[in-house]
Image (tube, rainbow, N blue to C red; front, side, top):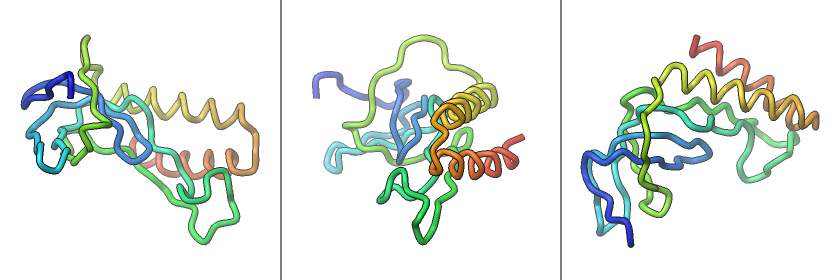
Length: 128
C-alpha cells in the first residue's frame, strides 16, 4: 500500500454502505483491516436489502443506522483513505448526511426510494 496507515491517523472509511471520518486505533496488516473510531458521518448507510438493490419485494427491508460517535469498527484497509482538513462535529455531520440522502431519495421517486425514505425517516427519529 502506497499510503501507509498508522495509529492516530485521521481517515475516511467505508463501512457497509456508510462513509465515515475517524481515527485509526490499530492496524492489523495480517488481516488487512484497521480499527477506526468514528468521529463524523460523511454518507449515511443505505436502507433496504443490499442483495437486491432497488427492490422493495424482499423478505426484509433493512433499517441501517449510522455508526455512533466514538464507535469502533473494523474496516478493510482497501476502504480507508487518509483525510485532510478539519473533522466536522459528529451531530451536524450526521444531520447533513441524513438530509442529503433524504433529498436524493425524494428526487429518485421510485418505489424503492419511497420505501427507503420512509425507513430513513424512522431511523432518523432515534437520532434527534
